Length: 311
Ligand code: RIB
Image (cartoon, rainbow, N blue to C red; front, side, top):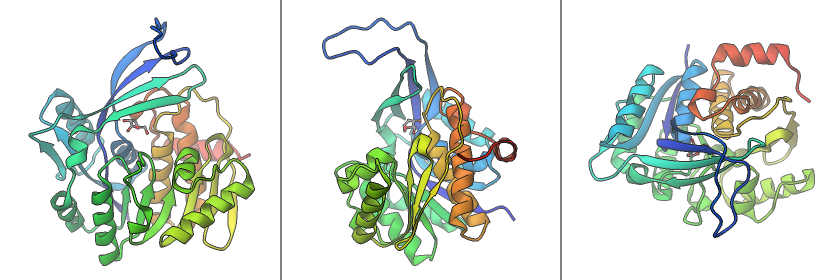
C-alpha cells in the first residue's frame, strides 16, 4: 500500500542563472550562460520527488496570488500531489529563489521567502487531518511553525523527518520535540554544531552534538559526493555514494531526503536501505539541470540502482 507523506515546506519559483564564476564585489560580470524561471523550493522539490517515487503526497505550503503561484499549483496537480493545503496568500508574493549555478555544478542560492513565511499553525493543523504515515519538513519556513508541527507530530505519534535545508540563526534545535531523522548537509551540520563534518571523526562529533541537543533517533548527514553518514545515537555507518558526472547539484539534497523518508516508511524503518535509495535519488538529480526537471521517478531510481554499485 502506498505510504502517505505529509510535506510541510516551501514553494518557490527559481530564477536559475548559469555562470562561469561568481563576480567579486563591485564587478559586473557578463555571463555566457543561460537563465530560466523554473519551479523549486525545498518543500516542493521534496513533495514532487516523493510523488514521482510512488508516495501519496499531501503538500502544505503557501503561494502568492500571482502568475508564478498559478504555475506552481498547476505543476503540483500534474504530479498527482494533494494540494488542498496549498494556500493562496492574498498578502504576499510567491517565494523566489535566485540560483546561481557554476561550471562544476555547484550552486549558490538566495531565497526571498514571500508567502512561505506565512505558513502557520492553522495551515499545519488542517493538513495533519489527512492521516499521514510520515511527516517531512525543512527550514525554509518559520522556525515557530516547525516547532509547532513537531509538537503535532509527537502528539499524533508520527515520525518526523527534518531536512535542515534553509536553517537560520532563529532556529532552535532543542525546541523540536522529537525527530525520527534529522538530515543536515555539511554546511548545515557545521552551522548547527560548529563542527564541519569533513572527516569521519568530525562526522561523529557533529552527530553526537546534535543528539545531545534534541530528541533525535537518527542523524543522517548528507555528504554529497561522499555519500551519507548514519548515526543512531550509538553506532555510525557510511552509506557509500554512487559515482555520476554532476552538472547541477540544485535539489539533490531535497530529493535525497524525500526518497529517504518515503523508503524508510515503506520498508518498516530500515535506515540503511532508505539511505541507499536516497543516495541513488540524489545522484540521479545532479545529472540534470534545474530543480523539478531533475527529480527522478521510481522506475529511474530502481533501474539506476540495478545498474550501478555504490563506491
Ligand atoms: O534545494 C534547492 C532549492 O532551494 C531551490 O529549488 C530553491 O528554491 C531553494 O529553495
